[in-house]
Length: 126
Image 1 (cartoon, rainbow, N blue to C red):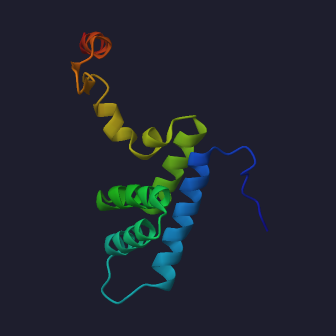
Image 2: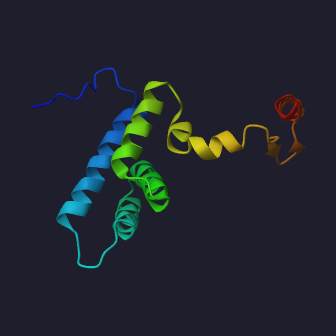
């Protein structure tokens, strides 16, 4: 029975749901004795990365990041889906806390600090 409303879901929401399901399967099927959940996610990340699923491995690493901070994957999943439904890009969905801390920083390029970013940084600081 398919009751997940994916017809109007963004790609970020779909990836959040699929990666969560992969994590559930990894923890249920391949649970080795004395293996911590964070280690299981690290193994899953490596497996996905080696097989060329780099986007999915990025999502698994985001779940691992929040798990390492003590947050349950179920809560992280809900957080990701909520942000995706608000229309955030995938980086802001995955790492909103990190992105929020960087708002006032000037953008540095190979040519130095850009004028647009410097003005934006001054506006944010005031």
